[in-house]
Structures are given as C-alpha cells and as structure tokens.
Amino acid sequence: MSKRKARNKPKVSTEGKYKALNAFLMLVIVFFVLYSIAKLPRRQKPVASKESRPSVIMPKSAEPLIVAPVIKTKPTEVGTKTEVVPTKPAVIPPKPTTTVSVTPKTKVTIPVSKPKPSAVATKTVKPTVKPAPVKPKEAQKPVTLALKVPPKPAATPIKTSSQGQKMIAIVIDDWGYNLNSAQVLDAKNYSITAAILPNLDNTREVADILHERGFEIILHLPMEPKEGAGLEKDTLLVSLKESQIKDIITKDLSSIPYAKGVNNHMGSLATSDTRTMSTVLKTLRRKNLYFLDSYVIGDSVCADLAKEYRVPFVRRDVFLDNDSQPDYIRAQLARLKSLADEKGWAIGIGHDRRNTLEVLKEEMPKLEKEGYKFVYVSELVK
Image (cartoon, rainbow, N blue to C red; front, side, top):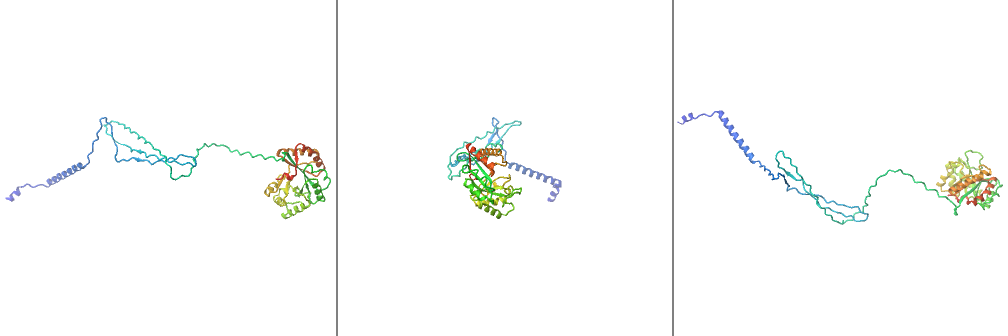
C-alpha cells in the first residue's frame, strides 16, 4: 500500500527547486533592506513660523571668546610713574548658525546684527616694581633737504698796544760792515731792532754801540741763497751736517752779545729746506731765542716748523729800501702803515744805508703823532 502511495506522489523538477530558492533569497534581501531603513535616524521636519522667518539656533556648546587684557602705557616725562590700565575681557559671541526653511523660488535675506562692544572698565594700578624711566619718543619731524653752508671763519682779532695803538716794528739789517751810520738813529726814543752780521771786523763794536743807544740786538745769520754768490763767512749751507749747523750758530752768537733773536741774511734756499731749518729752530729753542723770518722766498718752511718746535716766531711784512731813493722808502712806509691798520701791527725791514736811516729819522716822529707806536720785534713774536 505504501509503495503504491509513493508511486502516485508527483516528482519536483530541478527547475522548480531553483525558483523556490530564488524566491527565498529575495525575501531575505527585502527583509534586510526594510530592517536597515528602520534603523536609520529619522529626519525632523523644520517648522516654519507664521511670518516665514528662519529660526536661529545658538549652539549651547559654544563658549564666549576671551580677549586678553590690553595694557596701555601713556608716554610720560622721565621720572614719573607708569600707569597700567587693564581692559575687561570682551565677550565676542560666535557667528550665529541659521536654519532656514523656505519655499521653492523664494529669496530670503537674513540680517545679522553685529554685537555691540562691551564697555571697558578702566582701573589705575600702581606697579609693584618701578619701571626704568623711559624717554618718550619725539614726534617725527618732516625731513627737509638743505645744503650745508660752512660757517664763516672767525675774524682774526686785531693786535694793538695796551693803549689801542697800531704797532710798527722797524728792523735794520746788515750792521757790522762799518760804523758810519751807528750814530744816526737813537732807538731810546723810537724802538728799533738791529740785525748784526757775525764774523766781521766791526761786529762786536757795533753791537756795543747800538745796544747803548737803545736798539734791540739780534743775530743776522747768513744762510745759503739759491743764487749761491756773495756768501758770507760760515754761511749755513743745506749740505752741512746737523752738528756743523749747531756749531756755526753757537759761534756766531758768542760774537754778538745781547742777542734776543735771529733773522736770516739771504737764505732763499736754506729757509725752504726742512732739514736745515729744523736744526736751526731746535737750536734756537734750546737757547730761548726767537726767529724773525726775513721772508725772502714764498715757499719758506719756517712758520710751520717754528709752530712744531714751539719757537717764538714772526715774519716780515715789507722791505723798505729795495730801491734806495727817499720817495720809494716813504711809499713803503705808507704801505707799512696800511698793513698795521689792517691787522694791528706790521714789520718793515731796511738796511744800514744812509738814505734809509735819514728817511726813518724824519718820518718816525710823524707816524708817532698819527697814533702809531714803534715796538721791538720781541713784542710781536708769538
């Protein structure tokens, strides 16, 4: 009986089995999809207000920003106390987030008001430590371009006598060749300086006579000229050694007592030679004598060297008798007066000649009446 039932039961084909399996799998997939959808978070629908304005949601987690206090230091004068003014932290709200629900094709403008700054509380606090005084910065001044003009040199003060008189020094060179003119002038009335040549027959005698008559005595030291002719005995040559120059000066001075200084006889080459004049001036410094530069050449080095070796020094202004005519000598005296008016003093050099001495004897009283004072060279050296 059972065998008969089994034969009568219909057999399931392979195709039907596949269809059943596919249906089962589709059910499983649908179930999984539905389950996943159910687990998704539900989206809340925004609720628009009656006026269709967006609602502004402030995040609770947002904390106010804190601004560090600012210390304001006002520039004060040096020595005063510095005040520190802290400012209260200002609370700046974060930028608002807005949720907007609008209908399609509707343009909405959202005004966002700026937060008003909070009031700043000021408080004066005295610092516990006194700060170092700070010099306030000066306001920057506008820069102007200007050419720098060198200041004008100060005018050289005019040297005059204690009574305000213009001073003139007269020097007579070449004494010693003879005694013919020794009695013409008396320097006790008008101060005159006599430059006496050494190593001559009349050197010592004329020195005695002129000293007795009130002259200031100086050595008229022979020096080498550029021409090289008509040299005196023991003339200082630029080729001499330093020791030879010193010996000549010492010997010449021993023949002329009363000497207070030295001037050069000729010497256009020697006075322009640095080595020679350095030796001469160092020797005069040791003997406490001044030097009068007869200034026979324009490139004389005497002035600079005298300053370097600290030797009292002065320079001639006018030669009185390059021409022996009396009118020429008077014209040179007029020139000497003009120079004295200009700088307060002047030095004129003449020679032991009859015309020169006679003109001076005639003109010196006139110059004195005009207010000029005659002085020795030693009163003008510096």
